[in-house]
Length: 81
Image 1: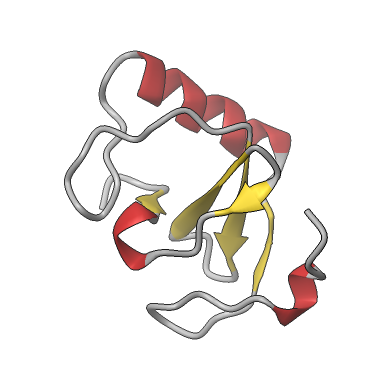
Image 2 (image 1 turned 120 degrees about the horizontal axis):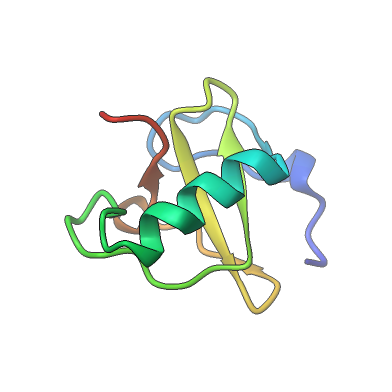
């Protein structure tokens, strides 16, 4: 990713984002593989290799082929929200 993460903000809340820790990514990948992980648009989350997590750790924006997908509908709720 060539954009400094410090410049990126959540398009929904305006919160800063940071790279998601490996443990969070592993858990979300596990849920995705079981078909239980949905994005805010209600669709099953597409594969991703990384993610940007909001400051409150509520939403993850997937990173696919080194590009952060910062679209509101693509955001993945991290908890059981």
